[in-house]
Image (cartoon, rainbow, N blue to C red; front, side):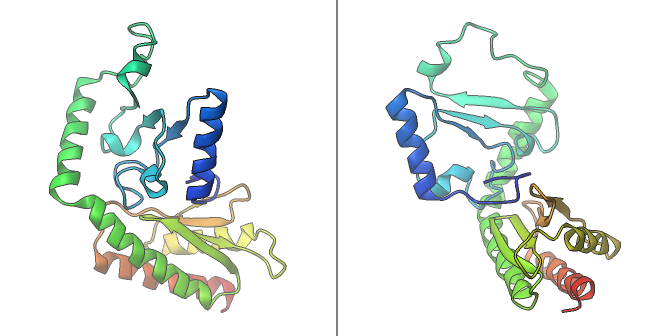
Length: 218
């Protein structure tokens, strides 16, 4: 799923096409799970939605709950092709960050946070689409799990950056912290934590609905 690119989900056909072309030409398929990994999309890995097996997975962010840690995951056969130490980096091997990662993974499993992300993500996506249905200024609502974006467009379908930014700023003033993204910064994205509950999602949707109505006059 594109993150900064506008919260655009992939699809099974696209991912299967990447896998086929990579195999045909001897290319390694590398999947970036830095934003989408560790339950964020309602499955443990974002690529789990699309029935594809990558050769290499890149991980960070949700791995250690904000502590600086990133990693590369691949088969033993593939990793053995590199000489020892060649995959080192600034954020590799930090003992405190590694302890935070282990604790994070234990909490995700113990508190069923992947399942929670799926359930609350459906609630958030459906609620955002109900708001969009009343608002011509929102051209599309899309997402996976707890990654939901509302794209603002003009009457002729062009990106409406000004309205998106006005909605984002108004939401912040009302206690709802959101971000914008996309090539034209006309997508307002919702990224609640994995521990978000149903009441909090309802509160966010209430604020979002009021904000959208106020900035668009709909």
